[in-house]
Image 1 (cartoon, rainbow, N blue to C red):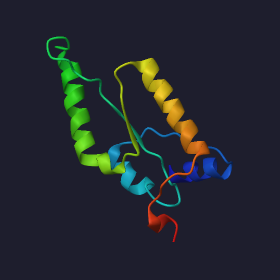
Image 2 (cartoon, rainbow, N blue to C red):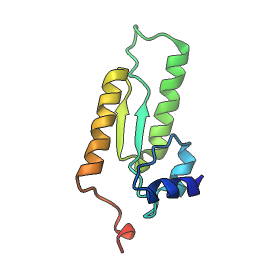
Image 3 (cartoon, rainbow, N blue to C red):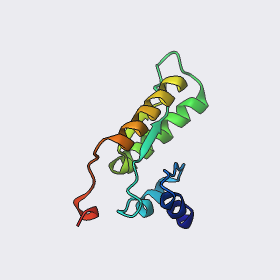
Image 4 (cartoon, rainbow, N blue to C red):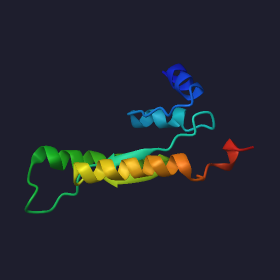
Amino acid sequence: KLETIRKIHEQGLIAILDVEPQALKVLRTAEFAPFVVFIAAPTITPGLNEDESLQRLQKESDVLQRTYAHYFDLTIINNEIDETIRHLEEAVELVCTAPQWVPVSWVY
């Protein structure tokens, strides 16, 4: 709920959400100023990744990227879980400590 996110922010904390792509339209506002990370499906290597569920996941990931990429601040390809987590932790640390670009409409 949006009210829960507001309460978390009022406490000076960061809300980490796993949302459906349609929610990005509601959350991408000056009030919430989200940093949106898309964790993409692993890269499929022809001849090595013949698993149908992995191929389906890759196709769904591609569709989400094409449709919603303009909402993403960062895309991480989940080829190796430990590397993905490390990259995500680094991104969160950077967002918390370095200036970030935001749409001009959020400032004025």
